[in-house]
Amino acid sequence: MEILSQLINIVDQNPESILVMRQQTEQRLPAHQHDKAQLLLVYGGIAYLQTDTKDFYIPSNHYIWIPKNYPHNLMFNTQDLYIINIYFPDEKADSFYDELGIYPVSKLLAEMLSFSEKWQGDYYKGSWEFEFLLTLKGVLSKENLKKFSIQLPTTDDQRLNAIIDSFRNRLNENLSLDIIARQSGMSVRSLTRLFQTKLHITFVQYLKMLRIIRAMELIKDTDLNMTEIAYEIGYSNISAFSNNFHQLTNMRPTEFKLK
Image (tube, rainbow, N blue to C red; front, side, top):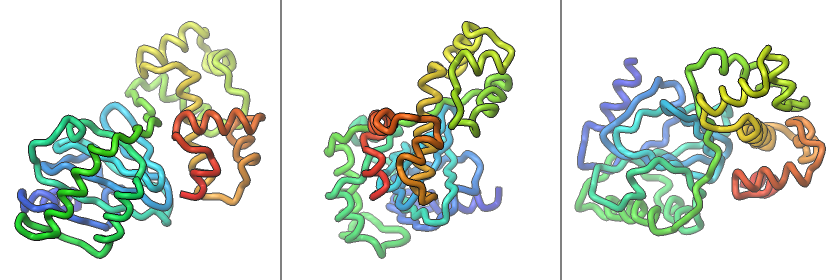
């Protein structure tokens, strides 16, 4: 809790400044929030952002915009991940900045980040660095990029969490609704209702996202080829794997590998 208190103090101690931080600290912290909005950029792996209702997955070369006073916790599981945090004071802006969202880093944003790659610490109104970072923030809402859509809903229902845990590490198996219901001692109808009432998503949708998330991890953390990865997460058809991957990430698996 001391580290958490120190981070919040650093972020909020100068309410009028724009703060740039490049330390990888938030993955060790419990859920927290701050008075400044946060632009969090991810390179080299996958970060996981937890909120009260969903787990968000942020792939390499993407960013997440976190509105002010939005409880969250960041985690990641690879040493190659590089993260940039830019904290902005509250200013009147359009509705884009009121919603949490994950987007790809565009060429324009990448150039602006490259230009400011050595910046660190607080920057204040009146400095050209402050104005540059404010312009960078303004670019986000003007690009009209498609949101990255993998958001796993969470629940405190112990029975459903136990069911999910039972197949989370068996993604290469045939995991139909009928099989999981039978293994869980439930009817298909009851299991279907449990997913819809507690997670507001179907079993098939949840499983598809879980498989693609695992594929993203394997692409970044192993030397397996795409056919091996498809098999490892339960796809016998490489085309179906590629299409589902694209549907959820707006990228083909081979494109994601190059990010």
